[in-house]
Image (spheres, rainbow, N blue to C red):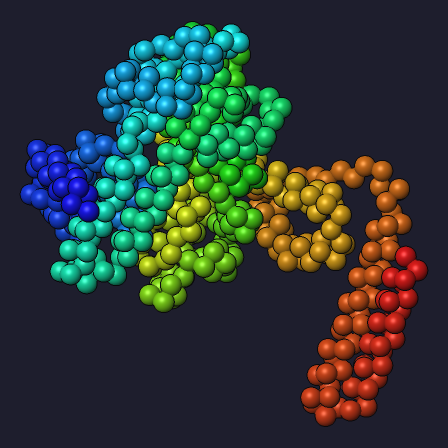
Length: 528
């Protein structure tokens, strides 16, 4: 216990000195500024970001988590946190060798024929070395920094103590539930520090992009990977920031921007499993124009309900459907007791009015995301984790593709994707053998939205049914079943209404007609 207190004291002193060197009075002032509780003209957002970078792994990861929380961090701070650079000096190779020996023991020399002492990349959680397996493969060896978990635990404890102090002196801080945020940050960072989880993430992405024509994920050598070491195939490519080099090789940077955007839309809206850190340093272009994505520690998921809600939200903007837009916030349980519903509806209406008459290619993705962030903050909305990370990812993605082509706007690819989404959703319903009633229900409730899109020429698509004649009898029977079930249900409902209104004779007729159609429905089911 005493050792822990001494370590905590030393870390607090180290943090305080670092903050003081950047012009912050003390650690309490820094956190008040970070969360927008205190405003200081001299404390620029850039300085707040630089402090996190100087304080190392835990604080960099804290900044990344906070950049996804517009409900507690002001927009001007979020814009700066998104720029966080995860670059720190490498650890000496002697320490790397110690970690390798602990994990491999006597097998180290049997697995690797050579490991380059100088790292090819260094970040807050790990550094990467080039190496060769005994079997001849060229590999990238990702090694976790020593004592990382202890540092994360220590910093989380220190920050929680600071928050406890601030809560005693500020009702605003208490209402923000910052302790919950710090616990989320701790959980996220410890998860990212477990390379067995990253290896699993890479397997999922490889499966999602299996046989993809222009997108690749490095192969993981699972037999040589542990919680502290990740061994992957080495990918020799050009960073997307090196645009002149790409152009000299005849690579169309705008084409790469389009393909990268499409790949991310696929991850988000189709797979529901996406890379949450698409900055230029994590993306390589190979000589055959294949896009290779690196670093799968920071990923996030969207549930099927969240995916559908996002599709509907985009549709609501294109079709000026305020009710559909409101449903987005309701369905994702974002509305809290503090939310003023009327004010939220007004904000949504202003938001949709702004973008309704714009062409997709005229919409700035970063601007759009920041406006949604404002709506969230101003209306005390709750953010699901998958949705929170999506805002940060979208802003990072736009910045990345603009490195490739400053004139390219990722939102112009949304139209193509929405068309694909509608097509694939309908195909999926049929392919999975869903009942005709489910498809009927879906079309009935989506007709108005699809119609609005078609009328405004925002959406055009065609569905081709192969071997339609072979399935004609099946569809005919399903439709008959629907008709019988709907008619019987209708008669039962109408009979109930007439009984309630004391129209007994008519109610009896409706009731017996309902029984008749129900019997017909059951008879048809038995025959089929």
